[in-house]
Length: 181
Image 1 (tube, helix red, strand yellow):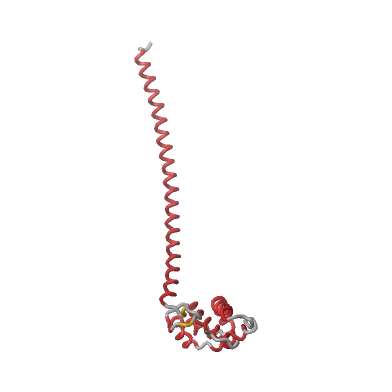
Image 2 (cartoon, one colour):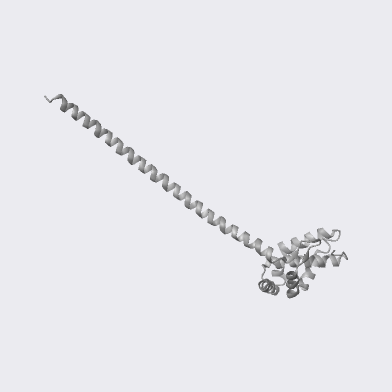
């Protein structure tokens, strides 16, 4: 028979071995869990960085657009809205009488009973939303003129269209014998 202290010693070693295995399994589980959490966090950080980059690119484009409009205005926002010197030079360069006259005649009946402000809104909306596409279809040779004019004057094509909206408004008002101011 074994001495009691040897039985006691063996049972202590067995208990410690069982606990060590449990502790090691616990540490392994914690390491796996931490690895998974860190991997998910890293993916979220990468997504966040990409979203921040996308947002900053978008904000830069908006900033550049606003900056261009503020530094290169083609019209004054007084009453009535008039062309700046740059806007006048754009119109002088383009000589848009051919298509402006066509578009003014087309809008004559729809603006017959309208006030000056309503005519202005119709002309500006047409210039911004529709005019360039109509020029592409009806006056295709003039599209390059518009693009070249925008380049020459350091503005965007939509700013050229803004200037043409003022010219269109003035022509429609003149056809209705209404003063601009």
